[in-house]
Amino acid sequence: MTKLVTTRRSVLVGAGALGLLIGVGAWKLTQKGPSVAGTSDASGAFLNDWIHVGRDGVVTLRTGQSEMGQGAFTGIATLAAEELGCRLDQMRVETGPASAVFKNIAVGREALAPNHGLAKGPPEGFGGKVFDFVVEAATQQITGGSSTISNGFDRARIVGAVAREMLVGAAARQWGVAASECAVKDGAVLHAGSKRQLGFGELAEAAAKETPPAKVTLKPREQWTLIGAPKTARVDIPEKVDGSARYGIDVRRPGMLFAAIANCPEFGGALDRVDEAKAAKMPGVVKVVSLDNAIAVVADTTWRAKAALAALQI
Amino acid sequence: MTKLTVNGTEREFDVEPDTPLLWVIRNTLNLTGTKFGCGIAACGACTVLVGDEPTRSCSVQVADLEGKSITTIEGLSKDRSHPVQLAWIAEQVPQCGYCQSGMILAAVALLKAKPKPTDADIDDAMTNICRCGTYGRVRAAIHRAAEAAR
Image (cartoon, rainbow over all chains, first blue to last red; front, top):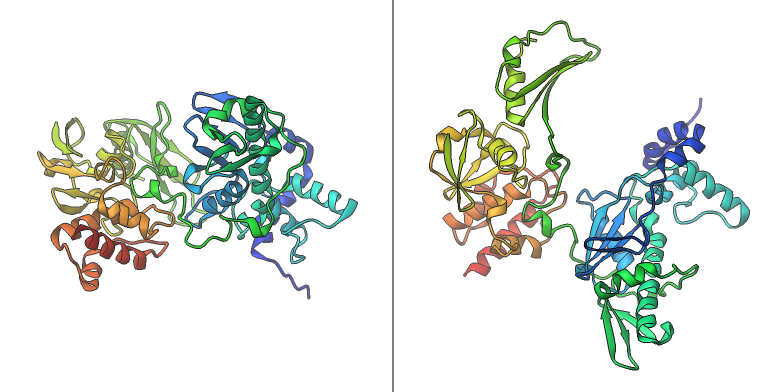
């Protein structure tokens, strides 16, 4: 008898990984979204694919993780802010678009080699490089398996450090001083010698034009002020107390319609027949859509769709 | 046509009279802070204030509210400065946050009726359901808001 041992992580990704390994080439091409690094928009500039600095000084961190109340946004923002040199209340976090840069590497490592502690890092040497190449090809943009911090612990700090170096570089260039004489604090670059400072917001566009450093130095543990700090206020909470947090049900697109669906009440059942005459004439109804095992009414508002669905003779 | 005052502004709608208040708020007015949960007045995610009364908006028809004044989460304050919102942030109440608009409005109504509620008052009044299980913090935040208002 075969004994199967799986972790929750490997279950989450295992199914997908098996399917995805087959078509690696095509999958990588289609998933790799265009990079926004170095581009400006109406509100500021992207220093890389993760970090946007607004002219108002607000740093927006894009992550591959979803916030579901588990604190993922706060954890990732803490890691990036630690290296970036700003406070958590100067950061916003949003879920990034579908893109290879937001793939969850930790969950991929765990899925391909479960129970080896690999979520923390790949094996040393060439073997590790091959392993991570396979992981990167096979893994997905996914939130789960308690992987947010193990996936982001190095990456979010590196992303923050790269952005910091670009902000410092832009300030040093403007002042005509060496970058090594500059420091960062609370969302500003400081030059102690001349007592000058520039906010991240003022530096955003110039920083986006800086060449990203090939190497960065991360703070040693003793210098951390945000990571591990007690009573860190969650970054997602303010918008959850004024109704502005946007959930799936809140998404609105131009010309968007709403549907109400009746599923077949039994597994394996199929739609027999439906009399839609009355429903089709109800206000706001656009279309009645029959599926194999369900029927939906599409209308201009949710309530009109629901009311018409109730009027169907299924 | 139905006339309502929503968050201080008089509004008129041309909707079927049996339309639940929730869908007027979410679809007609596009105020999406008020959530759809169960649709049968059980969970409280859709709670708004009708006058000072906490009301499950999914189960009340607009025709029955003619001329009434409605407050949704968006109307509580312009800048998250309502004492209940401040207490909610201070106690770090929300997790996923889906039920919290309704939870907050139910708490506002409770504090209006009973400015210094006991734990038992809170348990009686707060019938909203939270799947994350934030009840302990909800209670602490209501006490905090009551304290701040004194």
